[in-house]
Length: 460
Image 1: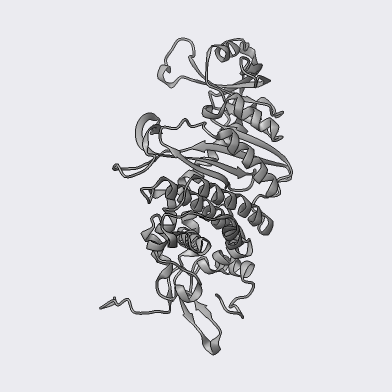
Image 2: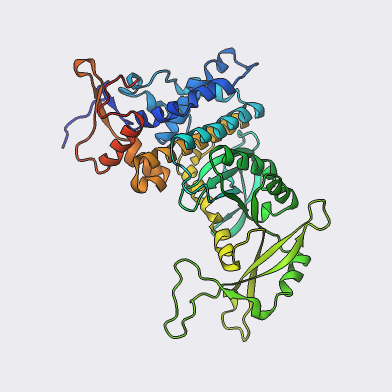
């Protein structure tokens, strides 16, 4: 056991995995996109808008290392980190830049997110099987805030442990792209006030997400999935204009209830959910979920009327287990897909994959909203989305289970690895821990980005 501890080594690197990760960012054009697209013409503080590209690069690098506040970005300036990376800025300087952001500047950064995702997909097989089918999932979450200093914060509804509660916060709207075998990447993100309707701006984001998916190399059919907040005629019309199919939950009203009542008792089909077990005596699947469909014209009183399939899943109401006759709860969704009714229901329910992205963001950069200014928090969320996609691409290059691993796992195994920087014969070499359990994957990422191990050229 050590008898003392001193912070005095200027050659130690705490986040050696940032070298290949940020090399990948450079190879996919992130610094150039930030330089070309992010411009603050009339800043409140003249120096605040200077050099936005390296400052935002510092934010993204810090997020990849686990920073969840502006002060945490100092992690990329410790020890030998500044010898590995050029243009690393202090948190106070970065905070000044972020506070200069307005709604328009955040849209500039959103454009960077979309184009950089296309660049990542060109460099890395982020969306395998995209020539067959891809999914765009859209949803919002409510991030709680405390105190009175957060611009745009207001009380909105969220669900915790299955119960609707009213909570003060900010509400990001996020769209993701995934395939049958790929983990989701973020195609769009936008911060809104906490009381904003969940579906506000959804049609525009869907259209942009479909365009982003096409730019990222998705040549197969695109299916847009969402819950009842997005089951409206405007979103459906946006899907059709963009050439995508839709699978959206409908709010139960009188016409939907009448359509459900018209379904005959013999039309219901048991659903073979993944992981279900078969009864050894009857051979039936042990599940009380059943599905059926009926043609339905939705939004008939609006200019966006459309006729498609109303698919209904019903489950026995757990509150009345001992009822003489089964009591059912009905869950309808509206879709124009062509799969069999049970397959369409399973595919629709996989919309929940977007929750894994929310969990990733909450466990990382969106642990809380770092600034009191709404524009700064908007920029922060978009940087978090870029960092999420960058980590996802790094995991794919590392190989194995890292291709679908959570961000926290990638940070622990790949990014936050201690190393010592040495320069024998003026050739920079990183000495990493011996017997590192994931060294094979770390070196796979290194070779796939820098190309040699150890490198034969300067790291910077």
